[in-house]
Amino acid sequence: MSAETVMTRVPALRAAARPAAPEPALSAAPSAALLAQPWTFVAGGQRLLVRPARAQDLPVLASLLVRCSPTTRLGWSGRGGTVLPLAQQEAWLREPGAVVVEASPGRAVAVGALRPATCTGQDDPIAGAVEVLVQDSWQRRGIGSALVAHFAGALLVSGRTELQVHPDADPVAAQALLSGLGARVRGQRHAHGRCPRVHVPRTAVDSLGPLRELSYR
Image (cartoon, rainbow, N blue to C red; front, side, top):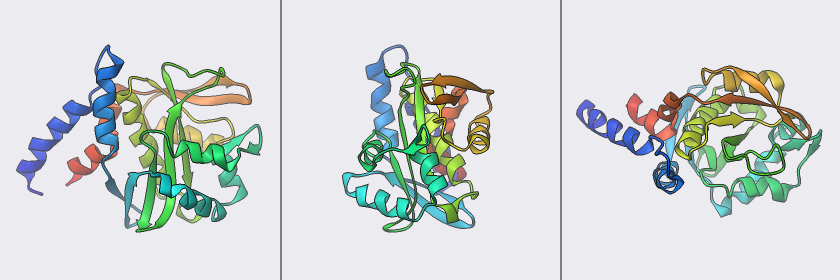
């Protein structure tokens, strides 16, 4: 792709992604359009494809869970020290913007989803919760950070401003992932503990996967 094409398309995509205020209906349309676009990034020297999750991917999640350690599974879906039923985990992949990360066609190494935060038992109008599962052998290669940054941008486009992970996630990893967004991490009270939460800066919209990939070309 030529430099001229990049300079033409990046401002247009950023304008489409910029959160619209104050009407929710206006912010939903560009979010859906951007989150439906697949994108790629390099992790550990290998280019990975991030694509929207589909209903057919539910067996992919089950297979990925088998290849993950109990600690990793707990970090993905643990609540109060217990892993949630597979049906609940599958529901996350039906959330708008949920993704599957593939090392090759049909070979998933990670999945991720952004859903409304429900610390109080009801949807939090300003917060979203990110759920990321990375296969153990693919951890510490930047996959989790790339997905969290992408979901931070998606959060802003959807009209929310606070991002959190659940209390059973590894606290050191959660702190590192959220701190990477450039804001102070604090604890949000939850029925099972305290959820690490961060206020997402408006500049995070540029971290949406399709935007970031295009700017690097």
